[in-house]
Amino acid sequence: MAPPVSTETAARGAAPGGVRRAGPWWRRIGAHLGPGYLVAVGYMDPGNWATDLAGGAAHGYALLWIVGLSSLMAMLLQVLAARLGIVARADLAQLCRRHASRRSALAQWLLCELAICACDLAEVIGTAIALDMLFGIPLALGVLLTVLDVLLILCLQKSGLRYLEAFVIALMGIVVVCFGINLVLARPAWGAVAAGFLPSARTVTDPGMLYLALGIVGATVMPHNLYLHSSTVQRRGHRDGRADTGGAIVFATVDVVVALALALLVNAAILVTSAAVFHARGHPAVAELQDAHRLLGPLTGTALAGTLFAVALLAAGQSSSVSATLAGQVVMEGFVQWRLPPWARRLLTRAIAVVPAFAVTLACGDAGIGRLLLFSQVVLSLQLPFAMFPLIRFTSDRAVMGTFASPRWMRGAAWATMATIVVLNLVLVARTLA
Image (tube, rainbow, N blue to C red):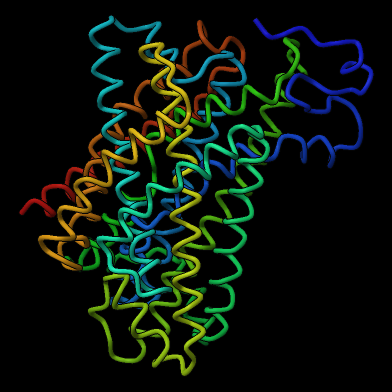
């Protein structure tokens, strides 16, 4: 049951959580902004960078349409997650627990925790590489230093969710600005960029291009974001009436579409920069973050390009850490009803990620940590069906959603999206293991 609204709150026209029910439309939209950005950072984390860099370096602008398609798939799934949270007044993890046996709920929780740790592993690696690029800190030491972000996130959580959202939006802005400047320095062929968003049959017929396309799609949708989004949208509060619920769905949809559109611009900018700087200048084999940073300065004629790349990577890693931490709390409370203090939850997740990253870095160096980054994406891919299937099922069920159950076209698009992502991920995992 939603908490009662005080007289003072009602007088201000605000819902629980500080969301305005009255006033100009742009103020009401602004009040709902935030949850979409918390999940959007997961779509431009360091795990996505490697596939975008490799795709641009090897095939120029030809895979931009795959970046756009995968972003549309992500938008659809996150809109479903928002609808579920607003209408059912419960997050995806809570509903999975209610509609499954205790053993099944425990298994789903463990799989989700594994995926969150894999996501955090990618953030650890990306942050350590960025610290090496910016300050020359050895990778092994950089991995250990990532534990300190526990203190930062703890301070922000004490201040409230809106401060966390503001922090994430600020970091996302840094990434957008850095790559905006790098796009100018890269001087891409804008006509070719526009043509790259048109679907091409060559993507399927060229084995190398197909493999990278699989990687881009597989690395895009983050399973833990579906749990997180269905939880955070509830904190905006709304009445039980149909009109108010419908309005909340509209505002949440605007929020997530705008946020994921920015994530799309970032992923496209990474691929375009790679195509303009590496592919066009005879370096098609660039796929590692360190190689991209080393070559950006000499090939663009300014060291600023490499510095901006490293700053953006650091910001992306830190912002993604916030969403992974919040998602971990949501799934733990939802599936098994355990609640840990935020610092303990963050420290546990980060420790599980730091130990293998530190060991591999000491044993194998740069090459080993690159392979570990790829492995983290494979783990995320394997967990995806266990998040997508219940999400689509619950949002299609009138017993859960009432009159807000997904219309037929949305159900069809969602099942097609799930089938596409699952098949592509299976192919990607098989190719990676081979």
